[in-house]
Length: 460
Ligand SMILES: Nc1ncnc2c1ncn2[C@@H]1O[C@H](COP(=O)(O)OP(=O)(O)OP(=O)(O)O)[C@@H](O)[C@H]1O
Ligand SMILES: [Mg+2]
Image 1: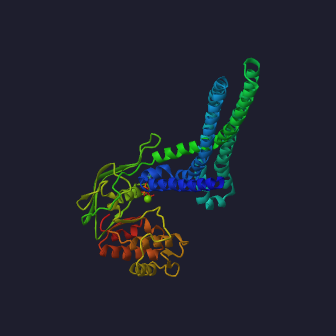
Image 2: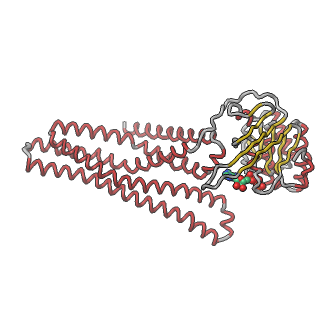
Image 3: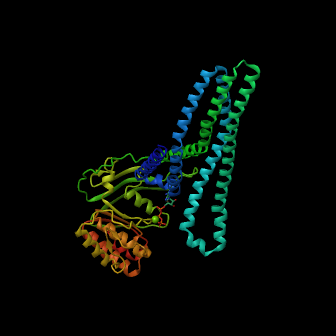
């Protein structure tokens, strides 16, 4: 029976972990981009990998806690039946014990909380270590400084907090155990000397009290796990609450055909940070037309990529209107409007698998594109995925282009796509690929610093 209940418990906890993580994925998928950018990936991944397992392990001790509480209740009722005076004394001891217990437990909880906060910083630094390993490996001093100021410092902080918190919590637990035996001693002493209690009754009372120590010890042993789990639970909830939902209709609706995408007095301002007002773009007034290539040009930090996220409707304009033809983009149709868009952002992500069904026709088309992008000798398509994506930066970007061309959208946006292409392929991109897209009726927006190709643009 014990094994069966343990197996059931493990299985249930695995399912609970999966459910919490699934909830998390949904929240991320439905969150506005600006909030995800504000929170940062380190915190999100940290919470999934740290808080979820901690919450679940807190959950797994709950049955033991419940059984012990019921046993304790039963034993206290039995004690009341045996002797009301002893029962009152024990209740008083539990009451005083619980109050005394709370104070160090609160302190322990606070220290555990600090340790958890330090984990977020550590996650951030681990990301720096992994993504910046090339830079760190080049310079021993730089690497040592990064380790000292970040990784080692944060590890030390976590270690210090964990050690201190565990010391406080475990000492308090021992104090709890001590109270149990103190009560037994006090009962024996007080009742033997000052109260008329029969020997038989005293034996019964002491036996009951000794029996109480078992469940109390179990309850006390679960305290650190439950404390840590409750901190993670609070942390996870805080994070989930700080991820708002986009509040838009997630169903696809039919959109009337459109010819122009119109920006009418569009403004966007990033949320303020440390009392500094966020960067602002706009008011913007322009039209992007089908069968035209529009260039967006400007210096570094002038707001081109911000505009790209406004154009592809990831950022919601703080003022103004966005119209697809005559259709105003609203929360009702924004998901459908986004599905008209194919984009390669400057920080694009290349999936190694096709997330669309590859019909035979699409497969042939993909192979044709592989030839055109001069990648057929490097990459093949097998079982709905690329055989490799371990390619040069320029080649990876070409694969991203292949995927977005296959998706056959109506509106395309390329944020500095050609920046890392060789001169020969830059030429092909600006003079052939963009022209073909234009001919096939697409509206194309290109963010570019390649002044040599500005003449390709129908509008800048
Ligand atoms: N996620 C963000 N949160 C807050 N502010 C941001 C964010 N991203 C960009 N900014 C602000 O917006 C400004 C414009 O950034 P943006 O990325 O749009 O420039 P850009 O024109 O694309 O530059 P580049 O040519 O270097 O790519 C930045 O200077 C920065 O202050
Ligand atoms: Mg940019």
